[in-house]
Image (cartoon, rainbow, N blue to C red; front, side, top):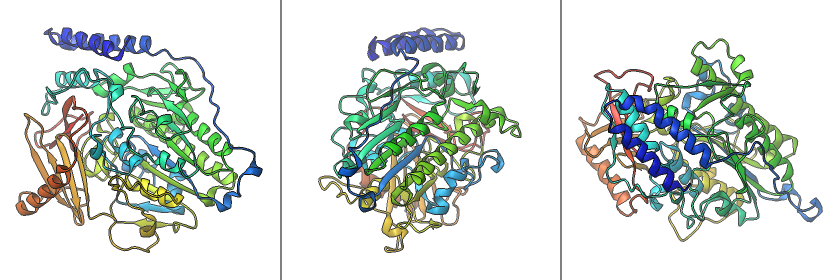
Length: 558
């Protein structure tokens, strides 16, 4: 069954449900039908072969001490600022992440690190290309057919404690999700490093398109262990503990629409041998061991701690002091993630590569409010899907012994696209000269060789949501079609947690920042595809809490 056929069937089911007065009774039927469609259209084998490339015999290669550094880029999914113990930690700081924290202790903590967007795919497009995703039309996240309409209808039907989300009437319903992604004309970090003689490996999430020329093997990677579905294990696995958030339509959708599924180098989908986070960590170790005698770029894109929330039972059992079930499961997921980072760092150390490897750790965006955990981004306001600090101010750590002074804390704002330019400089690769590269090599700044901020101004845009930061001032705009517009202005130097909106008292500054934002985007194309919905997100309350009359909402388009 083609994607378009599946989408048409989903739409037919939806229309049948919407046409009935008893829409809520139809929701389980829609979700059940979707689960059947997914399982029939995407068969998954019980196991599969993973055979990573390896270099020629050692004698034909120069000593690794003379070559360029390896680059290991670790990107997590929906990791909140407060999820690592360096910044607080899950369970009131009782879930420790010593391996992740060690990167800051032995390297640099980029304390004002910003993601490329407040959702996953546009952010990943920025870090892999070194450019604002809006420069090539990558403004919204590609999502499965029917996902946003289903989620929006369920939410609007179930809740009346805030403004409704708005379905976008301009949606091109015939667009195939496979055609939405990173244009092959973009130069990826993998392509740049491969041209320098690097072996390149991808593990985990991609979310940059599945159309012609868009898959990892076509975007510069020699090998790719691809996450096809977002389950960490089979839901009925006795070694796993699940937490379903029935109050959240996104969570309800994911439990029905995702599978425990990966594939290797474009082969058939299969189930991993163990819990997904652990399996990806083990395969990352295999990549390092097999390629220790040549420079390599490892892009380790964990799905953790994104929902659906599933933890290994042993990790869940270790956190019996946490009373809230979903927080305990979430904490277990963080234990697995940190353990995996530790295994990767240990593999570098065992193989004599620690001194000659640049390791970068970050998250694609802030923690999600829809998982029902209010502390994930503490002390910042906002969530994934907003341009408040909670949505885009992310952990951003790097270690390269000898090149980055240990224990450095860097306080100037930096951005995901700086990863591209920094890794390129470390590898001795020249940046593409035929296009604007927005990223900056951060190494001279981290070593104190260049003073001042790497960026005069930073911009973000996602349909109804736009933002600009210049100096310490940050303007956030929420302007949905057919909905109520709002603007916030903050001086982060005195109000880093965005508690006091100074926009009403500073109309000239607001106008100036608006003009700068509009001038930036005037020369860029519009989005390559339309959004499905403009979602209303409560800035201060998670999805598990009821809204109050005084609450503020920001719209997010996707």
